[in-house]
Image (cartoon, rainbow, N blue to C red; front, side, top):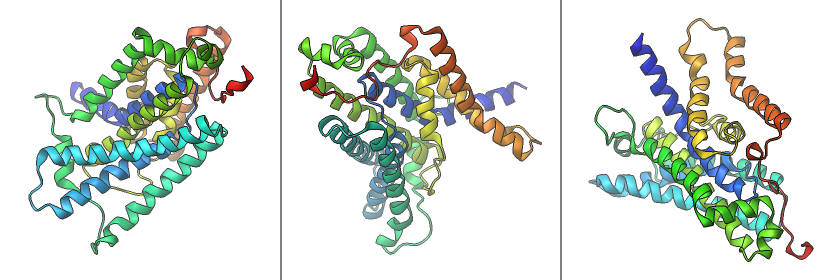
Length: 317
């Protein structure tokens, strides 16, 4: 009995870690007033960037160094996801493009990039088969704490969520960012650089989300890439933002809950196809119910930033 509970809890956490990365990154972005629906695409690019960096290192190095096995894919992910977030920032902050359309386009673009390189990377070097970085995957899965079967990225996801929560609620820069998300015109009049805060929050948020893709390909799947292997996890991460009421610490528990719901249909024996589909829908249904409840109660602390999804035109203030 206890063994089953421990297994279910561990599996829920492993499934929830990429969701937590994505949700934390999106919360930071949305606190600055930007709605980035490109998170699924950014997570894809983060994952394939880590795979590319790791593959190139393994391909050209006869004796891989453990530290570089971790560092190179990590840096590649930061660069890849950061560039995607920079594209989104440039289009929506500087050019003031529609945030919804830009985000959806970025998701399509990111998934396309991931699937293209996932199918073509080996052929570039004359190899065959599927991408499998077992050496690097082994180092990512290595647990730093005895008795706990999680790699370092799992702990990093929780730490980042706590740090972002402290940043948003306890620091002047965090309060400035929240002011930008609530009313950029007022923040601008108070001397806050709106453009800087929107750029930084969106880019850093995108990098955090990209780490979710890196966790999936390096830790969860052990260094392998499968086209469309992420499924709808990027969209679940965005749903968690609403479910967690834009609170990063609450997002930790919501991510693990959603991770558990995501795998329930696999772990519960004897379920019909219809029942499995209903369970898979559960996170989205719960999110809709939470959205309805918070809208009815109308408490300001449980609402999204007032300027979320709207572009700021300084000349109109």
